[in-house]
Length: 117
Length: 112
Image (cartoon, rainbow over all chains, first blue to last red; front, side):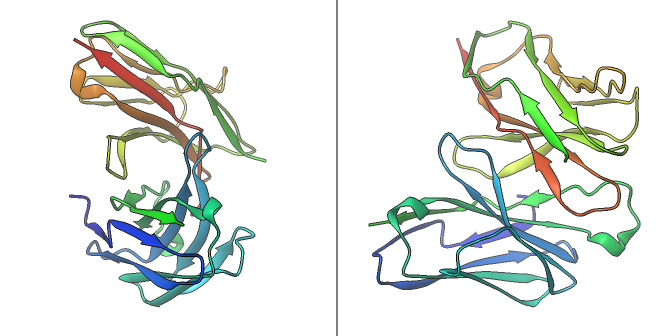
């Protein structure tokens, strides 16, 4: 247990569906992240939130829409996805930029395995 | 820009064999270096870290030394076990940013 939970663990959706992935951290962190992990490809950073403000959007298509209502929760809203979006979506958290730490260890959730039909 | 290169594998070893996974990095400043491990069906978890040159990180029998002169952070273990089968990611973070740069991952399979 890393203190970061993700739901659902598995999701199968059609290209016309709308669904949401949820991430919750119980570590008192201020930064949260979405990553995409596809087979045989490097880990891709999608979004970063620091103190609830989005600080990074790595050219992610608009069919992925993040939401961070507070520093403990992070959502990824999905709509009109493509089959190539099938992947493991990982959420992570860390102390955040204002922490004064000299490194920034990230704590990962177990991921949501998404399959788009 | 900053980047991390590591041997991609897959690496297959017999139990009790010696493990080395090479990692080299490119960074503009003085990064902190990490090894993360991902066991089957799980997210990534931090295995060890080093925050300055010549530091040695160690955990669960794994070690890595921060070599600034060769910009390397190779992961080693003297005697691997079947339970070490996983994907290993080398990573770095610049001190002034939140973003962690991950390598492509190295898959390790240990057979009895």
